[in-house]
Length: 109
Image (tube, rainbow, N blue to C red; front, side, top):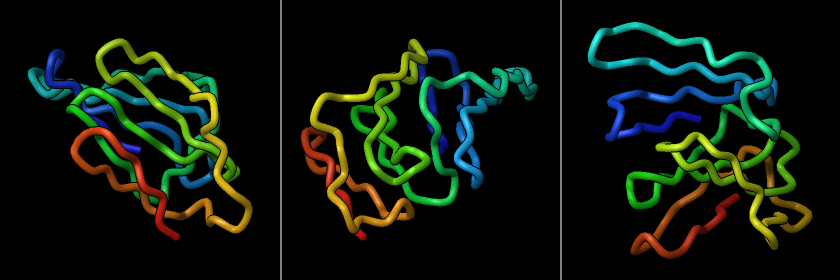
């Protein structure tokens, strides 16, 4: 997953194709990377699906098993697994996320 934090001018690179918990931050102002560690996030995240930014602050992702949704505040880097965020059986972990009017998240696929 990739998200941009406009307050710190960092690009956050999270998870991976193996469903990991790793994180990296690219600091745009000085063009350097910060390794956030292999256990940065509380939940595994796939890195080969699509993600959706809402209000330029929240990054929504599909977890590594394709069974739920993860919400990350790009400003605080807090991870939240929303109540009721389970994905119904039959939805691919490679599904796409889309947002509408900064209020709704749709899962396609």
